Image (cartoon, rainbow, N blue to C red):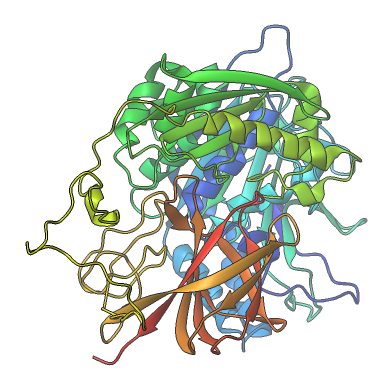
Amino acid sequence: MNNKQIVLHFPLTGGGPDQGPNDSGLEHFMGNVPKHIARECAQNSIDAARRTSSPKKVRLEFTLHQIPVNKLPGLHDLKKSVIPACREYYSRDPKAKRYCETALKVLAGDTVPVLRISDYETTGLNGSDIDRNGQWYSLVKSSGVSSKDVGSAGSFGIGKHAPFAASAVRTVYYTTRTDNSNVAFQGVSKWWSHENHDKKVTQGTGFIGLFDRSTEACRAIRNADDIPSVFTRAEPGTDIWIPGFVAEDGWEDETIKHLLTNFWLAIYKGDIEFQVNGQRLFRENLKSLLDKYSTHDDFNAHHYYQALTSEDSVSASEKFPFIGEMRLYLLASDDEQLPKNVQGMRKTGMVIIEKRRFTCRRHYAGVLLCQNEEGNSFLRSIEPPRHDDWERERITERGGKKALDSMWNWVRKNVQDLNPKPTSEAVDVPNLSRYLPDFPDKDTKQKEGEPGLESKPFSGEIPVTETPGKPPKAADKGGGDEPGEGVKGKKETGGGGAGGRGGGEKYPGPEIVKPVHLRAIRISDRKYRIIARSETAERGNLLLQVVNDDGSLDPAELSTVTRDGKLVELEHNTIKDVELSAGKPAVFEVELGMAIPITLSGTIRLEQAP
């Protein structure tokens, strides 16, 4: 077939609503392109693995190509008519203007960078253009629809937007071949409503394929000889082509790092291997790759791998209603680099949750696995679209919440069992005498006339001297010129303090830190009512911290805070610009990022004149 017969077609709105530039599906994945591409595409390939008596390992390849623009159908129409029309239709929207200018700049050259993501030992996508239950229709022709089986890695259908977020021209091509040698090719372009050459308003999503005038539909190409040669494939599986790939230099390393972070267990089990521009990731080199990336500040996968494989680890298993058997692996040591977290995963081998924190005096890493069908289905049903949590609020089954609570309480108990056992041996505590009262020896009395200490009762106020101190541990980034030490336990935090330790905001003068009396009332899984009191009137930033079992403090993970029904400004674990009246309670509604009971501590940080 002559490629000119392949067209880009945007259906008309037909009097329906316009679709604007702010596509929530794309916005969901904007930002860290390698992370989202790695996670979303890999879980799709795992879900598409062949279900045979002796399945082979799934292989997923990421390869960057430079392809002439004239070999990529639909891009000429994008450049000449669609993008200019989109820019004109939303001419007052600066964000829309930026999107258009970026895309036109990419299309100005003779070639464009195109990322090809190909899976092998998978089934390919079945179904026709009109089969609403088919995998092809779910991926190419629908939005917010998933046709995946129970227990798969994904379920919401929102992950299909991730490749579009990685394309400067907001376009993706799909090629698939099934086990029955059925083939299909089509492109999808996600822009926004605009006027076409007939001055009629279109929808925001266009299709690249064969236009059928009788149905006003743009169909996939299903004859292998008619598919443009650059997009053909010989083996069963699916290709995703992303023209105008937006990743910067070093995208390979970032992609590898995120594949290891999210799928180290699937690689270890031999369920999948990856290849990123020629670099293989498979079971045999998994440990060496984990060691290589262990020096990266935001990388923890090697600790969880050790928790699963080390001879020093301890393991336990327990069965729960709805969830079935869960197995827990824990590794504890004096290594302060251990994250003090438990990673939760289902049978797919993809990391689901890592943020749940359990208090323990030792440093540890844990792996929590669900390998049974019942639990896999239940846990999948309570995951949000990002598949990065098991949310209690999503449970609808009677008794389900109790089962999930029991599971986490069991994990908590096992973590607490890592604490050092009490010992009866004498311990020499340096400078302990400084903190103990000075009692006279009952066997020796002061002789009359000899010098000695006279004990008299003291009456009156105890003088208190406020001295500028170091800022408390904070999880916010500061504005200082010197690098600070940051806060242990959350690798994405830290930053430069005001030439000092914490990483707090830069203040013009010395800082005074005062404790605040807090009463925390738990009103739901993640919500607390915080009642703060101060003996004196104060105004400053209120720092909330979690009190661990050993008395140490960690930053509280705050999601939202309201006072008198209004949202207040947050900066990580700090409530900004809090005014406290002397002796009067200030009430805050706080939503935390964790759904376990905790004890909170508060201090108010006061700015003083220099």
